[in-house]
Amino acid sequence: MSQPERTGPEVSAATQLQVSSERIEALLTASEAAGPLAAERAEELVRVVVDLYGAGLGRLLDVLHEAGRLDDVALEALADDPLVSGLLLVHGLHPFDVSTRVARALDSVRPYLGSHGGDVELVGITESGVVRLRLTGSCDGCSSSAATLELAVEGAVRDAAPEVTDIEVLASASAPASGVIPISSLRVRTSAEPATPSASWQVLDRADELIEGRAEGRDVAGVAVAVCRIGSDLFAFRDRCPSCATGLAGAALHRLAGGPIGAAVLRCPGCGLHFDVRRGGVGLDGTDSSKPPQMLEPLPLLIRDGAVQVATPATVGA
Image 1: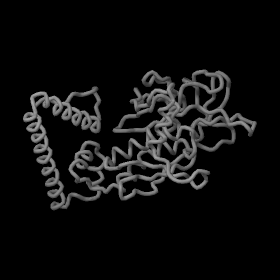
Image 2: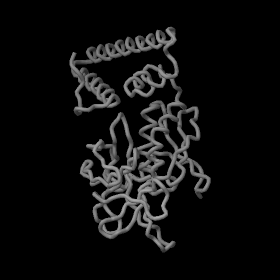
Image 3: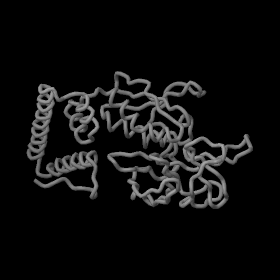
């Protein structure tokens, strides 16, 4: 039997499942050219095979349960594997309900949101499958919250719970607006900007070579990115100073006098302005309270399937 077409040497389990699904759809479509009877038989064959594997997976879980091996550790391992989790979802065998899966998905993106002083709260899930969220911290009211939702939050939720019908964002208690904002509406506003190409996740090459305490320059899908490593934490920014447009790659990180332990300040090599890496690149040199401080352009960064991924293009901070 021929193997599904691969898109690269390091295809993740989740990507492999998607590629296989798309290949099945393509073969079913091609079978229609042979006539209605051939198409019906091809679809029936797929259903029979899917049912067979579904029954096998169900029996496998029964065997593990009867043997006393389907404990919490095993359930966590099954749920954490993208390929196994996806197959269990297809057959209605996933060990976690939709609320638990959505909560786990939000936990997976909190490192990115938290790195920029934000967070996301699961308010609830309606009977019709609508997930209601609330952005908090710096994510609430941020001009690029729409892109953050689309790239980080929405993708994680839909991967974990494909039965979700919609995602809505509730206004925070401090916001003047009330009611609910469908995430699709936020996405429309973002995509309505003709000069902004659609964003996508890209694997960061040579992530294991990043040197701690320095802004490392990387080309990510044609976008110049400055990646900062602080211990085990990674932060990505557009490689451009907002004040003088100088590149930031190669600049050292340091702690200002009197600053807290673990703080990381990036000094622009061109104009000398200072930016707080852990707080989304906010400028530290502004003295005029009537004007917002200069700020680097943060990029979403997540670790998925063991690979560091960055969302490009920019204008998608927390």
